[in-house]
Length: 505
Image 1 (tube, rainbow, N blue to C red):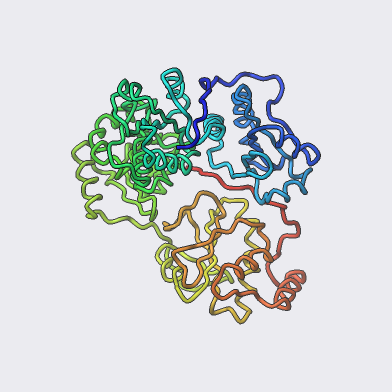
Image 2: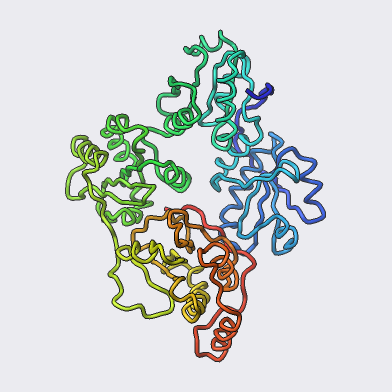
């Protein structure tokens, strides 16, 4: 185990109403000194015009006020005024949040953009990976977050201590970890060393790890035990369910009373499938449109569906049937046994490809995107997305360049309407652009740079099998024809960075 570090952490304070901002605005001449003189800093790199930044602002302020008494500082940098500083720190999208422990130790913020999530994440970041616990501070530690993990270990048990520390190092962004070598304390908690107890402020209150001390087994235990038996899907929890690695069963209902009633009715099913399928309710009044994404009718509730979050396959329960414990148990058991076929939502396969960009639909996805002889760059878009509309002329130009080059049979520039077609990819925002290189279809590379023709060409050249880059004269020809009006108009001003996408239901 790591060298003991005394744990001194008060309960999370309620956010105070502040008359002045507790978020420190930094500039190039103040940034380095501020980061050097504070043990830990969360910095937001933003642009005033960015919609996501505006939505984050009140949450960030609330978190800054809550964290102030913990001496955890939150800062912000306006990249329209401090472009050199933002470029120095690799900012490509807004908002970008980074955790600084001095200028040399920098890591991306991986939490949600809500005040409670920011507060929880930064408190975990401020703690050692494993805090030393005793009878005086363990009760306080249990309340440090919604979920905390404590190991009761013999100080001489080197192997168990090292295994637990290894897991703590890996998962420190997700949970606070503590450890105690006090045998009397373990006895008071009803366990015998070596043991791990996960404490939580929901469901049964705690779960005990009883298997052999193995990193993978401990990680699986932590993920399973920390997930509510029947939770709730919403903007703050959606990403967690999508990244859990197991299917998610949605229970759609329009009222809190109905969601509670259905949860009670299906509780035994959720218990039987714990660690195999996650169960969660969802507010059908607020997020009923999401039912359509699961191939359910979005106007008939209550409803039930299972989503394979890894392959993005949808298994809707027949909405003409009543949702009962017996009917859902049979449906879930059949799903687990592989007896339920997924439904596939797809537009018709185009009879002809009209424009330079290849139009893909769900039914043609495998044939085009997974063609192992070609590098395929595909844009997942939504018709209503403003960023997608802004990209369209440049994306057409990109496709034209490759179509008129020697790489026309080796590189495909494609797009798919992700609102009308089921796709096997995890899409959390629009537009999402990925390259499926020939010979590496199982390892797509997501594009995150500026949305210019030149940068997209560079991305394809660097990540594709064929290192394909159209000759400079071809680019000049397309640009000239665009200027003369014979081709699709391209944008004249490129934003310095894009708004980064975040999970939306």
